[in-house]
Image (cartoon, rainbow, N blue to C red):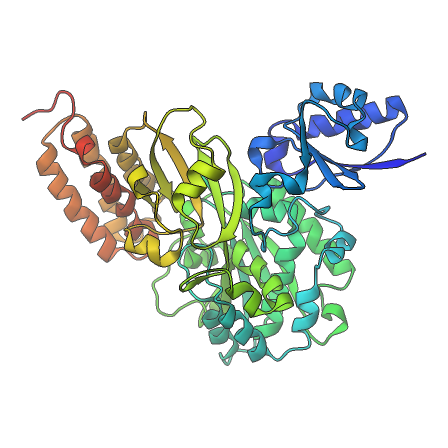
Length: 517
């Protein structure tokens, strides 16, 4: 009897739209019709608008069908989809789907292709090549490759990873740590979650390379509690890696020891800030620390600590395996390599788009995103999470890289892009930014704690048409104090969405119905 391989994603995004029911129905129909099917639960390909995306292995490659609902499964079997036959949900060869084919996937090279918890799959698709190579290199050789590649922190600050690693390496402490910040709290971001659920060994490999480079024997992944599936997948991956000798006292039979554990977040947005995260890992309230000292000098439990986010650490294996030249040839200027953009909000085709830095915002929103889901005109796009700037369509020619966005008054952040149509009220969006900061502030510094509260009150008055010009001047003064005086980016960046909304959508801040003059 011929065996057919069928792929159905098991990540939380796909399951939220019925992938689990689709998988169960495929197993039922296969048994009923005596079709021998091997069901592989992969991660999502990132084309969330096509989920649940079902794929079958054929002689020509994987053929895709989607989005598939549970009621489509019988007709798929009637059409012999498991042989790659035509069906109304046919999308052709997965690799030929233009939305996927035109991307340049490095960090996400295996996501959606392999069984997330199969070490065999991982190795067959290039996994652990970087780690094996790193074990034969001197620490400064690894850091040279990392620095030459141009890899910068993908969590938002864009700080060069090589400098951070070198600082930890050169510290005199015998005890060091590697911490992965997976507290992905920005609205419209989900790349960390998709990677941890779809290719967990990549993250483990990147952390292990970091550990053997700087002499750390312990790693901690701080995952937000709202990601139970990611936590479960990462925990299982750690157990598998430990059983097979990829983690433990002798990594791959070497003299290097490295272990990784999971720490679940406490639901606080500010714990995405690196020092507040360290406080939370240590069992304390998640409050921002004053700097200096930097975590690379005094981090977790007072020891030198590498802190990078999921995408940064998961980019390391490919850089070491393929060499820095391969990575640095992508991107523009000082923004080298690829960025994993996340399309969300009122967008027709949401999901993961990995491309070299330099792609335009227009290309991401209108070509990959397909415009708004409602079909109405795009009015604004927020780049970089809830503390990122708003851009109107007239600014969509902007290059998506660190320097260009900074020059345009924005920031890249974690690569989140949230689309709004022309029904959005930009004054209300500015008010939301201040309310969000007031709600999520750790309360340690006055500019953030009080500035956000007063800012929300002023915007509320302006929304009611009360002394708009006078309150606008006070609001701008508060924004200046928050930017210059806040301890961390929570308060320091909150003025960014407020001021960008006021700049690009001035008319919505100059008059309101019922204004009191």
